[in-house]
Length: 268
Ligand SMILES: NC(=O)C1=CN([C@@H]2O[C@H](COP(=O)(O)OP(=O)(O)OC[C@H]3O[C@@H](n4cnc5c(N)ncnc54)[C@H](OP(=O)(O)O)[C@@H]3O)[C@@H](O)[C@H]2O)C=CC1
Ligand SMILES: O=C(O)C1=N[C@H](C(=O)O)C[C@H](O)C1
Image (tube, rainbow, N blue to C red; front, side, top):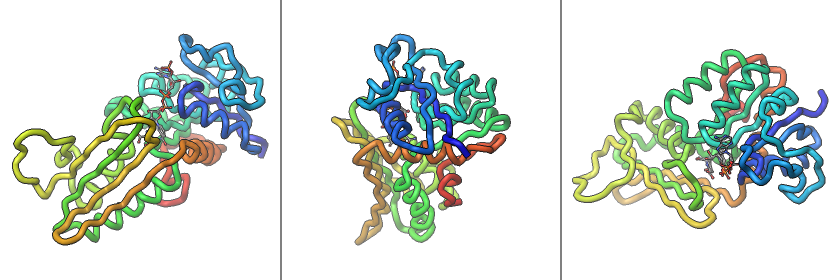
C-alpha cells in the first residue's frame, strides 16, 4: 500500500500544526492539503512555513478540494467546522478522523449518521496513554463500586473553549457505565455555596484553566482512610497527533463505520 494521503483541517491551530509536522515526518503518510478558515493569516502560506519544515503544500480555504484530494481528513477544529467538513467528506466518500470536542447531542448524531456511509474515527483523546487510562477506569470503577466517592478533575491551557474537556466527559461515561449509572442523571459539574453533603451516587467534575497546561486528567476514588487516583498528564500534543495518524491508517480500506481509539488500538 502506498502512502496514505492526508488533509489537515484547522491547519494553523495548535493541533493543526502538530498534525502537519507529524504527517510531513511520517514516511507512510503524504500531506496533500492543509485548510483553514478564509480569515486566517495562514491561508496563502505553505504548510511547511507553519511548522518550520520543508513542504510546499499551500494552506487554502478550499475544504472541498482538500477532501477530494485526500484519503482521510484529520479534523481538530470546532464542532461547527467539523460538521461542515463531515458533510463534504460524505459527498466525496473520504474518511475522517475527528478529534474536535464540545459536540452537542445533535452533532454526535450527525457523525453517527455520516458513519453509515463513510469510515469515521471520533475520539475525544487520541493518545495511547489516555486510552490506556480509559481501560483502567473500567476495571477500577468495578472494584471500587461501593464506598468510594468519584470525582474527575481536569486542567487545560487558558485558550481551551469547552468544559469539561471531552476526555473528562468520556471518563465520566466509562465510570458511570461500569457502575450501572446514567451520567446525565448523576453528573455534578462544579459546586458553589451551601451544597449540602455529597450524594454518594454522584460523579463530580472540576475544571481548571490556566497558562499552557497541555491536558491533565485525574479520576479520584475517595474512600474512608484511602484514596485511589488514576491520572493522565500530557506534556506535548504530539501523542494526540500520532494517534490521529494511526487512526487514519486504521480507516484505510474501510467502507464505513464509526470507530474510536479503543478500536484503533485494539483495546475493545
Ligand atoms: N481528540 C484529541 O486527542 C484532542 C482534541 N483536541 C480538540 O481539538 C480541537 C482543536 O484544539 P486546538 O488545536 O487546541 O484549537 P485551536 O483553536 O488552536 O485550533 C482550531 C483551528 O480550527 C479552526 N477553526 C475554528 N472554528 C472553525 C470553523 N468553524 N471551521 C473551520 N475551522 C475552524 C481555527 O481557526 P481560527 O483560528 O480562525 O478560529 C484553528 O485553525 C478542540 O476541540 C480540542 O478540544 C485537542 C487536542 C487533542
Ligand atoms: O483542547 C485541548 O487542548 C484538549 N482537548 C481534548 C479534550 O477536550 O479532552 C483532549 C486533550 O485533553 C487536549
